[in-house]
Image (cartoon, rainbow, N blue to C red; front, side, top):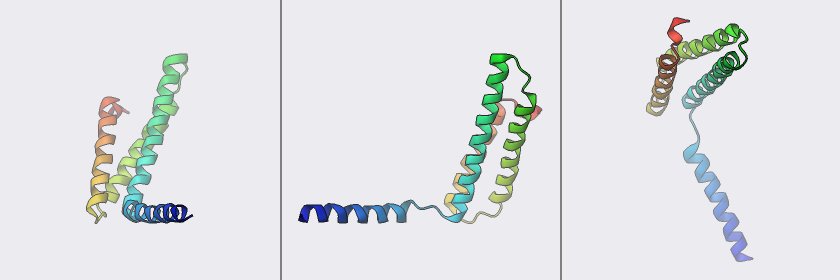
Length: 112
């Protein structure tokens, strides 16, 4: 019985410690949300390219929509980066910016 109580107590303490140290600030959450938008846009882009390659159907509008989303995320990130105060959020933003630029470079997105 005591062992069960100790295990439950350790679990609760561990949960609160994890929540305290792992919780993100509002700035970090904003950058993370943009990262999720970027990931979705990349997924849409790749799906449209695969559809074009696999079926030969014209999915130009799908590709263009995904590129517009990527450009929108890049613009919003640029604005957000100017307002970030926390070093950790700025680092997250910088990593996201580098991911976006690498994706654009690898996929020749600048021509769109």
